[in-house]
Every structure is written in C-alpha cells, then in structure tokens.
Length: 267
Image (cartoon, rainbow, N blue to C red):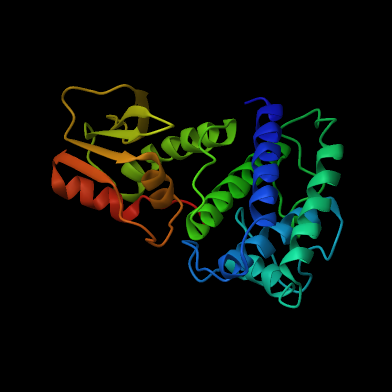
C-alpha cells in the first residue's frame, strides 16, 4: 500500500474531525460514545494526546505508563486522556489542530522505507512507518465515527478513509474465522456490507487451515451475513451499541453467531 494513501486519508479525517469538534454543543461534549467508557470529550482528548505526542507538540503522551507488545495498551490510552482532564474543549481542539498541522508538514516528505522502524511512535512502540501511518488513519477515522454517532452528526463515509478502513477490517475476517473460531477446513461465509461503502466478500478456510478472503459471493457458502457498513465498523471496532444494529443472515446460524461474538479485532 502506498504510504501517501494512508497519509491523505488520515489528513482528510483529521480535518473533518476538527471541523466536527469545533461545532459541537456543550451537551455533545459530555455525550457517551460507543468507545467503552469514553465520552466525546475523552475521545477528543485521546486524539489530541496521540497526535501531539507523535508531532512533539502540546502536552504529548504519558511518560509513566510502559508500552509493550505490538498494540497500545488500554492503560496507555487512558493515561493520555486523563492528562487532559483540566483542559477545556476549545483547548483540546487547539492542541489537536496544532499537532495535525505540524504532522502534515512532516509527512509532506514521506519516509523512504515503509518497513523501517518509525522514528516517532506512541510510547516508543516498535511500529514500522507503514504500521504507524495505517494505525493513525484507522484510529482517526474510527474515532471520527464515534464522535459523529454520539453527537448525532452522520457523515464521513464518502471519503478515502472510509474505504481504506472498511477494506482493512474485511481483511481481518479470515483471521477471525480460521484462528479465533478455528472453523473447519472448507467452511465458507459470505459477508456483505451495504450503504456508502458496499462490498461482498467470501471468507473461507482452506485445507491448510488458513483463512482467505475472496471478492464476490460463493454460491456454496455455509452462511451469509449482510449488514450496513456502519454496523460492520461498529462490530469490528468493538463498539458499544448506541443504535440498533442493521443485519440479516441465512444459513448456519451457529457460525454466524460465533462470528459476531468474535468479530471485534481492534484493541
């Protein structure tokens, strides 16, 4: 994947998020989001924390919480939010805006090697340039959706970030089917997303036990699952239910139920 695609999608979502936050009512800032335990204000503080740490602006990130493994621990993300409990919404927006502007200037020149270790990462986690830029794009856009849903301001599905995130989430389905569910070889499941980012894919487990994803619908699938794209995003991102889920299925109901129970893959 070209790094510029991640950067452009991140920048697109960041600008939309800043515009969204700048126009929220006082009540909306305290509204609960689908991100478990966080209000809109907490989500904004989280974005400000990560972007300011990476860009070395503002208050930055926590220094007293260790980062280990390939994913940021929930405790690290929470610490960055709590560092900003005394900041006003306007101050959070300003911190995020400055960090995004600085980061965009830095990323005007992209890293030469996508696989090389990134210089500036949250908590010094050992991500490559590609992983860092992809993760920041996903995090920004998914949290943009958290804010929109909580504040009742739909949108954000008409840009490149939505397409990239949904495509990436679909690519996680073979792992869910083969590794998390340990489905038998030959198992096939069709998944359809409807709405502004519409896709139909078949997830199957090969004879080698590995999961694979194919575009289109296999006629001999064990089950078929169809849902709105915002429902799909919320499920894969592990979001709490803030609105009715829109989904239908046919075929092996146990397989569908198991998949829905294990579909969340984001930390």
